[in-house]
Amino acid sequence: MFSSHSAPRGVLSVTVVEARNLKKEDFAGHNDPYVELWFDKEYKQRSETVHDTENPVWNQTFTFNIEEGSSWHKLYFKVVDKDKVDDDKIGEGHLDVADAFKGQPVDTWAKLPAKLGLSSHGEVHFSVQFSAQ
Image (tube, rainbow, N blue to C red; front, top):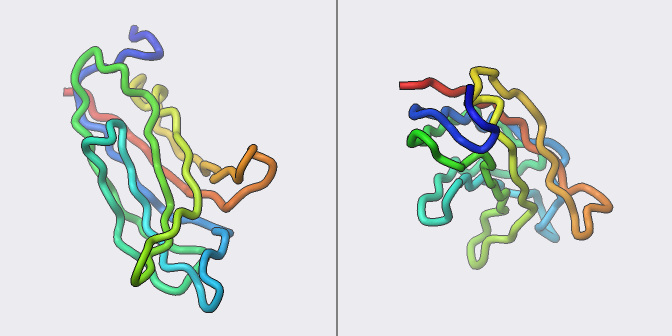
């Protein structure tokens, strides 16, 4: 059908459901996390900020137009703590969405690995579906 690195034309819908056990970035209080998503750094999408929690629930869906033959199969994401002055990165990772292009919905928790991958800064729940056009 399709190679694992080539997509049909369509729309990829990515729902950022929730996160759990996010590493606290604030010395006092809790995180105010949001998520950035992208295939290409030129076009990032961003969730709303959820205030005062290490276990946020977003339930926000983002769409990405996919061109036929696209080699995009890794969705990159970053979880950030919103601050008044400088935002702090909690963690980042990527999600392989190749199965979604084959018609198999992806519903998974993606870890936010710490440096060297020895521990975790939490994890994010994603639900991904693809609609061919």
